[in-house]
Amino acid sequence: MQVVLTDDMLCVSGERIEAGSGGQTLKRSFARKYCIPADIHLDSIRSHLDHNGMLVITGSRRGWRETHISIHPGAHYARNDSIISTV
Image (cartoon, rainbow, N blue to C red):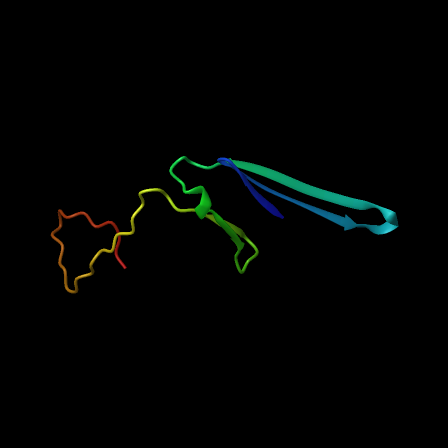
């Protein structure tokens, strides 16, 4: 498998050749191209295989900041308050 970044184009490709019976071979290949958005730092792009063998590609956005949100115990919500999710 190969991951190549050229300018703002990310190309993921792979090839597998299997030897079959009777001298036959089976060749499988793929190639996918993805345009990287302009707000991604190209030098931050990384790839790895996770524990299931899935290819994971990550990158950081420009101007993206991490925000920490405080958790307060015992908060009660009125019925008309919006709750995004509960844990």
